[in-house]
Amino acid sequence: MNARGLRHFLKSGGVVAYPTEAVFGLGCDPKNRRAVKRILGIKGRPQNKGLILVADSFCRLQAFVAPLKQSQIFTMQQSWRDPQQPHTWIVPASKDCPKWLTGQHKSLAIRVSSHPYTAKLCKDSGMALVSTSANRSGHQAAKTSKNCQKRFGSSVKTLNGKIAGAKKTSTIQDLMTGKILRK
Image 1 (cartoon, rainbow, N blue to C red):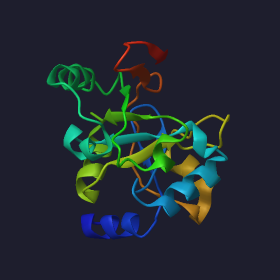
Image 2 (tube, rainbow, N blue to C red):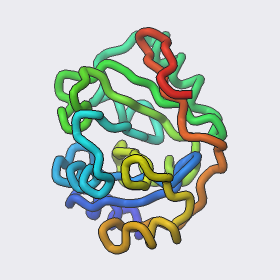
Image 3 (cartoon, rainbow, N blue to C red):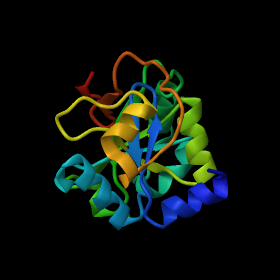
């Protein structure tokens, strides 16, 4: 799928399965409520938990994030360099951030991916993407495109590619407190 086709597919509510650092992810346009609800339905995940957004640069995430100090942005950027150690940050959500992304929280989980495939996907689509593991809640995440096709069939567009080989999913850390929520 070329960049224009990808952008149209996502803008019109499409859901993709794509390789990330450690597992395949399910992604969609974070501004499309219908697409986000589709992902939550596929996963069997409640909306109140909130979701992660992934992008190829912090610039694509800024509209969803409350203003941060330059030192805080620098701290996050330093953690986003190694595809073998993905790092997700919990940050204050902007007042315009859709509630279907934050769930019951006033914060949002964000990550800039150093995985070339994931970064290119965001660049080609021209947007940040919802990024949640390609699985039903509580089950093991898919690690190959073949496994995604088997699990989800035509309900998602599975993109071919390989995960970066990270040993585990991203560390999740609260930017404001420094507390690590998942290692």
